[in-house]
Length: 345
Image (cartoon, rainbow, N blue to C red; front, side, top):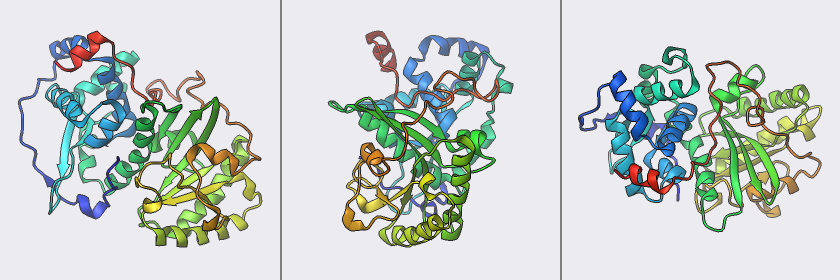
């Protein structure tokens, strides 16, 4: 189960992490890494490049059978300079470790892409600076909505799978001249796809500004000819209720409100505050007595929506620029017996 998202005020200050001996960032070390990194390690580096920060719990959801297995491998990746880590301060108890991409991981990624490391849009000081960013809680919370879906994809008996997950930065590069969602996702189940834009609200944004985004989403639908549902997550029931009033007023002011389907949820709408797959989504305009809908059933809320088209880059189209790395698959590669042994060594 995902942890309850921590608000930004809970991430003030940072606890010092005991330093450990780390490998020197040299050509010899990169050659050594080429033999010792598994496909899952390389995939995790790509995921950190795309989505910037994950907690230990989120990385466990993404790629490991247990937190112990994740901790053991992450310790090696940290010593090897593939990932860096920090731990925000908490007055009572402790936060999990937070992980970002480090220099050796970025160099490996650049070489795999066939570009010079300097051409990769990576800056170590900037990444380490995320530990002090006022957007850290927002970023980690939004990532948790998607890592919960990756976890669901790997559950025995699960027939659905998260097939696309774009970061806010990637969304901004594609649609930022109109609107920048906090993320884009696509889920496939029983041969059917559902896609959405994510808006993650921690209660700090003015509701008028949040509702004003619907005008831009309408413009995006006009420009692209594609209608994509918008899912909005709120921290409390009260915040969702007041936000829904503002969103309904904004929808009624649009020229073509059917092009902007919106559904909302709040942290306590389901057992797990960040499990996006549960029956927690309520379309704007519906009453709570109508019941909340699971992610896979969203198309039933808006039967006029055509089936989604393939995402740009997953359809084989090139990235925006040569240094813009294509988005990684959101689910990890399956390790062979040889790679499993290497991952535990």
